[in-house]
Length: 162
Image (cartoon, rainbow, N blue to C red; front, side, top):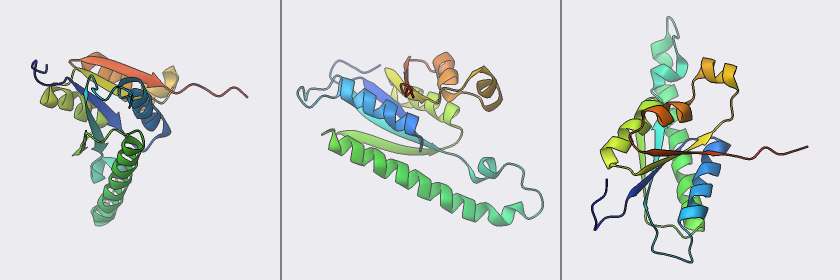
């Protein structure tokens, strides 16, 4: 936890999904209002970049030849995510923000970042998977809720009624 002279850390996990940016924007709108510039938290954004091997899975013979191309694409995606996050923060007048890209599985990266930065709260978005998809694909938010050593806020984007 933060000392008395430091603000507690709010860690927000971001990826290239709409849900992730909704969660980040929700957190900024509710905790970093421009009307009260003495924010209750220090904002730290973290993006988990998958390794090229995990991104392509088991490619078989010749798979190693495409790894550099996959890695380049993953770096471009990470750069886009970070740039979009910085732009959103700036548009909301939140300029005191730390941004980090860490290679690895999002579940582990976020839980390890909580420990590393002594975060008081972790904010993640929810894709809204049902039980079957969650069981097959896994849920980063569910994993973090059970394993992160801080409070975890899972922000769900409201469903649009047709």
